[in-house]
Image (cartoon, rainbow, N blue to C red; front, top):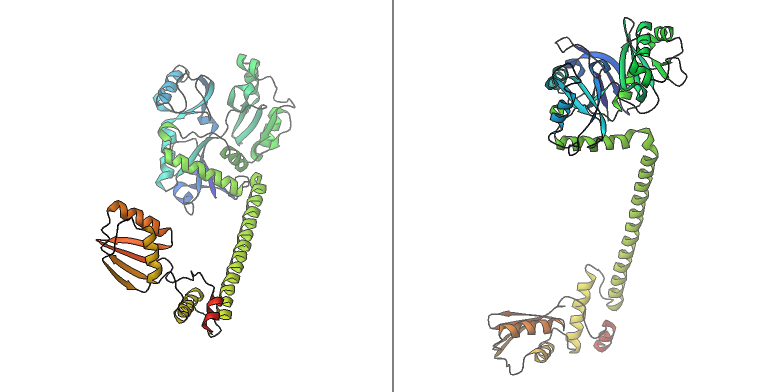
Length: 432
């Protein structure tokens, strides 16, 4: 699935606001990287997954411990966070948009991100106005638990130095200059938390190509190049989603998005390539197996059909064309019975024998109407209980009985079958 990653500018939205953006197909490599206004940005992107990146200088990070009983799904969560932040921020809490770290639980310390609510909402509204549906809002940098990282970003006239890691207390964004770095190093909190110098070999240092030379000059050490598009791709892979509370999507939309992300990752992510090959091979084996099984069953069915036709033509050589072998066999057998005078289950004598064995004592017939394979018996005067018992008893002997008023309808279950006590070959011998 195509993904559009948009970096929000620091300024408030206006009619001429331009957005840096990156497009990717697999989340790992850049397809395009450019800048455009919102209306131009939306051209050809209607079915694209849209991820918005918030610049690090627009976010502040705080650690809070949620009270017991207030978890991620609590209706009081936003109010509790705003109350806890009231003494830590300069702005009024209701002017800030806050977002909680993923997988937070009550009673544990958690990171909380805060930014200007009006600024963020204006940009999101501008994107939605041109039919760009934002699925996630992620921070440019988020607190990491691993080794400390330092990133030099920005333009030559506005270079920023971003520290990320547990030792620096989350995310720290400072101007890149010797004076600021010296000041940062002697601050009490930094002295306790940083634990590494900017030239330490354990520190991961990256810089955008435009500011790499300046970063090496200020830091007095080598830095690795990391382009802005690559950094935006990395930010989009973050587990964070700042679209919470007032900016959150509906529960159904979140569920659909979650399944869409999982499906997208399975279909395109490199780490799922072996699983994709395995699933494809499993599907192929199943399709081949089903086809082989269907061919075998069809062959067996055709063999049985040919065997029935062969039995018909061998028993009755005068039949040249086989249309419905069982029906033709039944007709020929009935003709043989009639020619030899042999009794069958469709004869009146056989039906009366079955009835006599099943009738309650003391019941007599008043009248009989008989056609081939069917008898109407009158005058039995059966009660509902007697009729039910009689019907069940007759059914066990291969006949169907039903009561129509005072008339008992009796007929054979095999009027058009080959049910017979004698084989066709024996009947043919009698006919000769």
